[in-house]
Image (tube, each protein chain N blue to C red):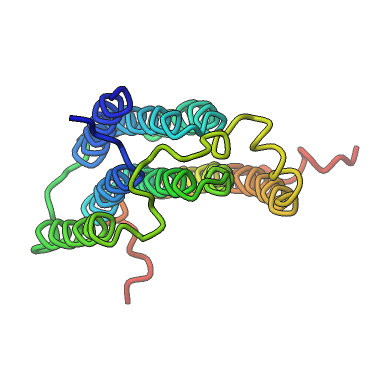
Length: 183
Length: 103
């Protein structure tokens, strides 16, 4: 019963936040809506016993990524409200129809097909098997999946270097006095 | 009256969130908001991973979500840097104004 109440509350909050993202004129409101969605999805992770992933979700997404988003919004200019009028004819209606068809197919698959491996009862025989504590996540992460872990570490390093390369800009006349290391 | 929240419910919610994100990609023109819609879709898929992992009774779903989180963080860093670079060049964040490759 508790799970049902929390699911309905957080599911509603996440859908409201998602609608705010696509409807808000001001990008800051869109970012706030996204924050609400990310936070409620984090709560849903806890409902599914994914404790560690929920903590990472709050820290990385609701913390770091949203800060970055807000920083860029402030940098680009918050006062510019976007013109939401549509330039392509029928674009909005076609997009709505396509989205509804996609969601309808997905829900029909979940509801009718049951994916056959989804058990009818959500409470498993051994809840301990899916209890995502730090120890339980770390053991396969640094054992079976250690190569993928190292690859993501490399990816993060490359992404940081790429962001610096993209963001740094020298004025054309500035030359190379700075950063050559030659005196 | 004893409702049990099955993994199918979470997957249905994830499908709705994914649909809203896809709709936002198709409708909005601001590059930043389109980026937020991508994050929305990534999170919907993550929720599916978690629900499926619980249904299957192992931790692989949660590990997949962990890796998706890392890749999404890297993607946000590079994507926002590109948006800032374009803004510095063109003074706009609207994707409609980027028409250099139009024939």
